[in-house]
Length: 446
Image: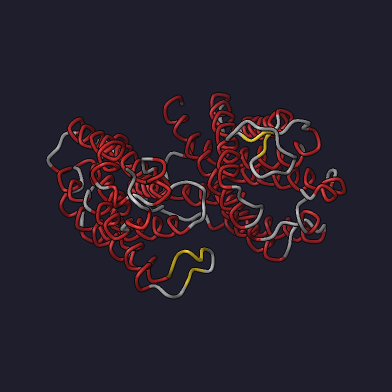
């Protein structure tokens, strides 16, 4: 007999979510293999034990399914953190603190006492988000003190520990508020783990290339004003574009800026091709394809992050691959969407493989995917000519771009996101995933 939906207790669910953080304190004493076994047991617990032993913590829709996707995602995230941070248990512990303590604090405090809603997510409150930052910072710092930095990570001090815990808490708490059709246990793990890995590898630059910054600012401003006069950018898009272009130019030089410009020119051109037909079908970009700040940040977030990260990393080769992958994926997505609507005759949803009308969120077509792949290959070939990446690096970016674009289509179809705010969040998400995947491939094969 199934438990009635009214018997669900969200407070007990959050306590169950919070309790496993106690096991994070064991990381100091466990070998990597032992920690993996513990994490795998947690996956089994989430899959088979919790749905039967603690059914009162199951939400109504989970009671119907007989399992909790959120609990499975939580356990899988912990397993992933332990798996990838073999030599850096302290990083796994900090990310785990955000996954457990921050998420629970946001729910318990925000749901009970929160009043003012976040402008980008009415389901979240300012109090809940601030509580998440505070308590996950505290828990992360305590776990750092307990787990300790390993010898290979350099000199440790309380200031460094506070930097790690606080900045990671801010990143994870913000990511938790974003409306992406993916379980927040997974997004927190991905964001926190990636940020911590980057933070552990970052080094403060010995000198700043101010000449490159000034040149980048002038070139970006000139290009942006030209785009504004051609009505391909709004004023807010111009401001964001100038900032992004300046960062990219200073980090990747004129070659990187030309890659970004190639994406912008071709993306704008493809948006205008067949615009009248797209308008009649209700699939055209609004405002005749002019890009505002949210469009620029949606497709440009990952290239911007790559540019900023490149300033603090010694390994420029890996960052070049990541940056190129982000730009290639952005053009792949834009091309497959804008030209796929004109060329594709049969569009399907990856979630069900059923045929749907063109313009349906998440719909893909063979023709759209093909022209998108060719556009991404063009960016990759251009990067090879500029000697930003090697031919093997080009293979890495094409693999990551193909996967990430279709992942975005799957998530868009699953969540039935619109082309507004949630659509731009998905753009930022999948281009970032592509960047990280390409960097991982490059780390292995280059």
